[in-house]
Length: 206
Image 1 (cartoon, rainbow, N blue to C red):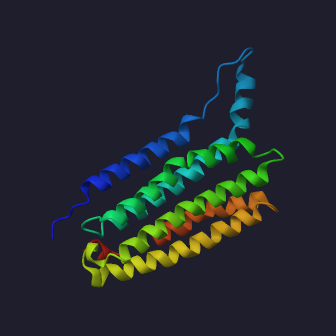
Image 2 (cartoon, one colour):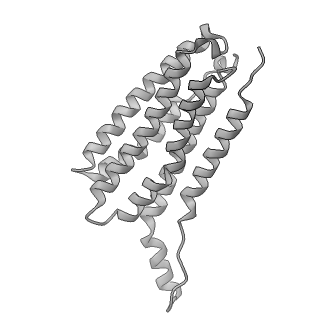
Image 3 (tube, one colour):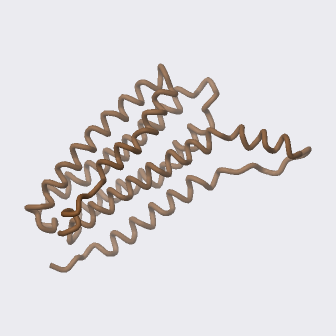
C-alpha cells in the first residue's frame, strides 16, 4: 500500500528543526564595557547552566524526534485524530525552549526548585503527548503498516513512555527537595530513551 504521510513527516521534521534552533538562539554574551580576556572567560564560565540545559534539551529533542520518526514510519496514512495528536506533540516540542531557558536562568537562585520542577514537568508533557499519539494510532489499526508485526512495537513503545512519564513526574516532585538530583534524572533519561527508541534489524523490515 502506498505511503501517504510525506507531508506530515516533512512538516513535523521542520517543527523539530525550529525547536532545536530556538534552544540555542538565546545562548550568547552581549558586548559590554570594560571587556578583557580574563573577565570574558569568567562570563563564559558563569553561563554554564545555559550550556548544560541546552545540551540536555538538545539530546532530549533529538531522541524524541527519533522516536517520532519511527512512529510515523510505521503508519501508511494519518487520519483526522492522528494529525491532531501529532499537532499536540509539535505544540509541546516547539515550546520546549521556554522551560529550557527558564531552568538555565534560575539555576543558582532561590527559584531553582520551581524552575527544575517546571522543566521536568514540561518534558513529561511532551512524553504524554507522544503516548497519546501512539494510543490514537493503535485505535486506528488500519493506518498501521503490517499490524501483526508493528502493533506489538507500538505497545512496547507505550510501556516505555508510561515509565518515562512516571520518572519525569517523580523528578518534578523531587525538584522541590533536591533540584540537582531531579535535574540529574532528566539528564540520565538520555540513556533510557536511547534504549526505548532502539530498533532491532527486524524492525527495519515493515
